[in-house]
Image: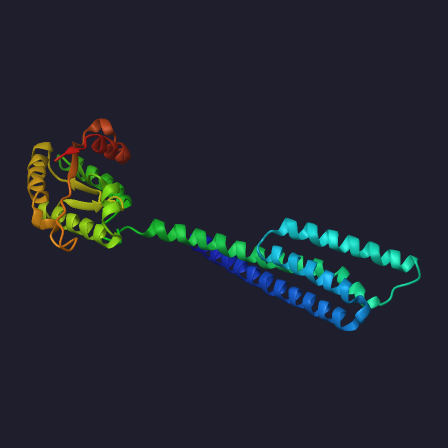
Length: 296
């Protein structure tokens, strides 16, 4: 395991340095392209002013397309620009010679710009992919809800398995209770984000204060849904339901959420006792409890 971890770290470092090297090389190539364009402009006489102005305009368009990652269009335009320019110069040579050989620098400028931006864009894409992977890994490690501070749905699924094992070993019963506010979308429309989060926090405190210390409360979504693992049978869960119903009906619970206005949150509750037919399936256990939701 240690060796695999070390190899993974080395691989990630190689990718990081390769991406940085590609970015730096692309920047140098683009700089060289602009230097070449400046030399061509400075080395040509006024008689080639219109030709150089046209090439500058097209080259600028190529650079913009490449910078905004429209790479295929940039390559096609650069190729067309180079072929047409080469054809004009070949025709000039056949008719009596080139006016100024310095102008041939335009043959390499568009290609250098496209190549340089391709390297830069590839390094950026690699960095974006790395950031996405890191973000996913961080999200997988997060076990708590940022608003309520309670453990989240991932934690609940893990703890359900643990609680089932504990109940089976000690010949005890467990129930899963889920609570959800009604009319969530309407609440979000009426309340500001901070006000809605305030309501969710108040609801979480009610749930935590009502259940026993050995029972576990979880915030299972961002819309005020809560899960509770109760270490009792369904009759004991009924007592918890009655206490919660009484607490949620207290209008003082929502006092001050909206200044100079009173609000009331209607709740739904579902509770199911675990049985062997569920075969330790935490997801099915939750789905059955969701299906049992009713107004309280």
